[in-house]
Amino acid sequence: MTSTPVLYTRKNPFPAKLVENRRLNLTGSEKETRHYVFSLSGSGFAYDVGDSIGVFAQNDPELVDQILQALRFSGDESVTNKEGESFTIREGLLQNFQITQPSRQFLEAIAQRSEGTDELKELLQSDRTKELEHYLWGMEVIDFLIDRPSIRFTPQEFAATLRKLQPRLYSIASSLKAFPESVHLVIATVRYESHGRPRKGVASTYLAERVTPNSAVPIFVHVAKGFRLPQNPVTPIIMIGPGTGVAPFRAYLQERHATGAPGRNWLFFGEQRFKCDFFYQEEFEFFQKVGVLTRFSTAFSRDQAHKIYVQHRLLENSKDIYAWLEEGAHLYVCGDAARMAKDVDVALHQIVATEGGKTPEQAAEYIEALRKEKRYKKDVY
Ligand SMILES: Cc1cc2nc3c(=O)[nH]c(=O)nc-3n(C[C@H](O)[C@H](O)[C@H](O)COP(=O)(O)OP(=O)(O)OC[C@H]3O[C@@H](n4cnc5c(N)ncnc54)[C@H](O)[C@@H]3O)c2cc1C
Image (cartoon, rainbow, N blue to C red):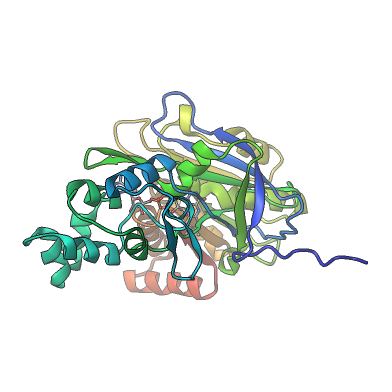
């Protein structure tokens, strides 16, 4: 009798073994970006380049202890989540609830239990969303508990104020055609300080610090149909991916190399310093040597007095970028949504206007047409 293979999904994630965790930045870097390899053996995953992997992480046990202590819970108290599942509060804080950025419900519960008037109460009562956002920047659940030590919750009351811990998505940085049994991710570890306390991004530090070799992490494939390679292997592509934004483009290059796709490929990569932040330098040099990476433009922002970013490299190559677009190239942008993607978009408008002899309105129409034809694709976060 043959058994039906298990289908691994977001609801039933695959326990993937972590087989590699390597820092990509060298001594002298201000960044911590890591290369991860998970074994997919037995997963049945058949992802495409451009897709992402969802990772279910666990919260930091030290932070869980701090919260339990602030609330005077032993950790063994039983609580139930919104789905009706029961577990100890310690277990819940470790794997079920978002315990860093506070939810609206948590803030309201804090305001309700605080005596007198304070800024939080005022901001919650009025429609001052922007000011509330500003007030909350860098504030975590633990800050409210430490700052208001007289506030009391029962374990269930506290659990009911918390949102469910959501999985984090990461662009797939490898092709199954090059690595049929594994998936590679490129992840920047989130660490910062606020209100006098060191903070850790949930998933990025879980992977960096607490997943031991060969231990299993629940993962699933998140399909991104809108971020695929062009169907025609001859179509040229321009890829703009500074920092971790380079992840899907490493996968595209592997895929185009493995399939022998004749289309030209142009990569724009940016980081802080050539000496210590040039991830995958040797791999990209290999792709150049074998003719897969037709053009490679890099921008190292801190190697000179004035900052140079990928959008500056685009502008320097204005004529050729426009020529590639006129020849039907697809253009991809991946990485920082807050600044990079916007600056790249402005540069593109400028390039099309200058090189195409167009007014700003005509340049905007040209770029809108690219978007409609699905030739200008973004995966930004
Ligand atoms: C489709 C997609 C693909 C992605 N691909 C990648 C990828 O390939 N590589 C990658 O590294 N990431 C990628 N991301 C981002 C990733 O999903 C996570 O958001 C990121 O790793 C942070 O998650 P975390 O759990 O470590 O941090 P969280 O616990 O989620 O903490 C992040 C939060 O901390 C706060 N914060 C951060 N810095 C500061 C600061 N200086 N001051 C105050 N508050 C701050 C902000 O509220 C921020 O939202 C992708 C996202 C999407 C949607």
